[in-house]
Each structure stands twice: as structure tokens, then as C-alpha cells.
Image (tube, rainbow, N blue to C red; front, side, top):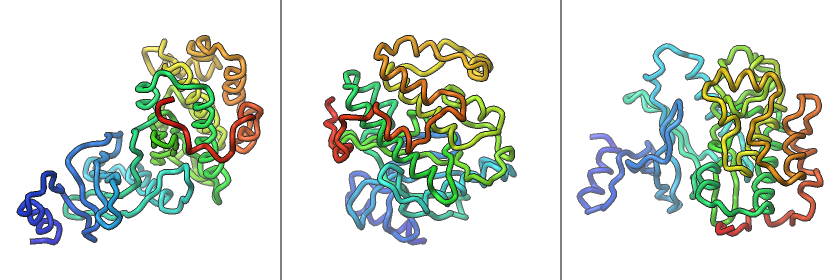
Length: 303
């Protein structure tokens, strides 16, 4: 009997009300059965760090599901390598990673955000002040600034409100799901277009782009935050979204943004690539004037 199985059986014998389904090779992390989320390439389970006494996220990728598609497997491993090297308050942290050859899975433990993703959080809390949303935005930009000034520069490429996570009790925002991230210098054309169409910059479709694609996506995130509506909801096919995006046609949701300051800020993010400010420049924008630099993580979740 292997170590993982004996630990699980021991817990059951001791009357654990919620036994672990599996335990990592070190015996430190235990996975529960309930899912936190399901993505295109992985499942995320609730788990527990027995050493620190905290809940964590157990990300599991079944490598057998991709057959001989080495590009997808390479992209998954790329996410793990990137996460391992990143240390920032606004980027999801990686704690441990291993492969299970017997089950042919890649497993990695990350921190968990208690309130789920930003889309879920915003839909749950309908009455949110502009000040609170500005604080969320500033944290996203701080995360992007870290990625874009990293050596080498890292482009997220799939930033959207479902890939941004919340600790609602302190108003903390973290960027996650770096599975489509790329470093500058890579052959972008070698990657299939697998982003979220509503949030993809026009040049991303052409596969000739820089980190400014993340700024465009950030603008769409702010649009969704303000309107609680997915951009291009009026389009019922990806092809229709694509045609509007490459033609520079703004989502109809823009008409629902009544605050001229907010609309102007979003337009800056959606400008032509060379006209878009960097994350660092946006952090200095008058849009954020009046916010306390020290209270990004002190927003009451009942806003």
C-alpha cells in the first residue's frame, strides 16, 4: 500500500467527516472532492495545507486527455514554470508541483482566493462604488505591471474577469490562469489562438502583438465590472465578435457607461496598440487620483 492510500484510510478510520480523496507525495497537501472550477485544460479542487493549516487550490491536469498534442502539454507546463518564478501580491502564488505518472496527471498547489473570480464576485455584489472598482483595477494593473516588466516580459494573453480572483473580505485582487501566457521572444505564431474572443485585442487575432494586448483586455474587464455585462453580448457567434473587433466596433455595452471619466479611461485601453498606455502609465493616470496608495487591500466586501 502506498503512502497516499494509507493516509486516506487512516483518516477514514479516525472518523474524518471529510476525508481526503488523495494526498500529495510529501503528505502535506490533501485534496477534497469538491470542485472550485473547471477550465479548458484542468480541474481545480479545494484542498488543505496540513502544515500551515490553510485551504489551498489543487490544480489537476489529466495529460492523457491531450493525446499526442504536445503544444497543449507544453503550454500547461509553461504555466507552471511561469507561476513558480513569479512573486507578487497581485499574482496567484504557486506552492508545489509534481506529476503523477501512475495516473498520468500534472498536479500543482496554488493559493486559493476565498471569494472566487471577479465575474462571480461582481454579479453577487451588485452595489459596488466606483471607488471600490478603481481599487480593483489598480491591483490588476499592478499585477500586469509586474508581468510586463518581468525579465523576460510576460504577456498574459487571456486576461478576463474569470481569470482574476478575489479575497472579498479584504478587497484583494489577484491575476491567475497563466496557461496562455507567453514571454516576449517566443514565436507567437506557434501558439493557437485560444483566448477569450470578447476580450481579445484585434492584433491578437493577427498574431502580431506585444504586451499591449493585456491592456486592451484590461479595458474590457473594466467595462464588464461597470456594466455587469459581457462585452459583445449582442453577438451570438465568435465570427461576429471577430468581425466587430478587427473593425474597431466597440461593444454595445459601452453605451451603458454613463460616467464620462470611466468611458474615457476604457477608451484609452482600447486604443490602437501604439496609442495604448502601458500598465505603469495607467497607474499614474488621473483616473486613480484621490485613492490612498496603502488601502488597496482594505475594501469592505459589503461595498
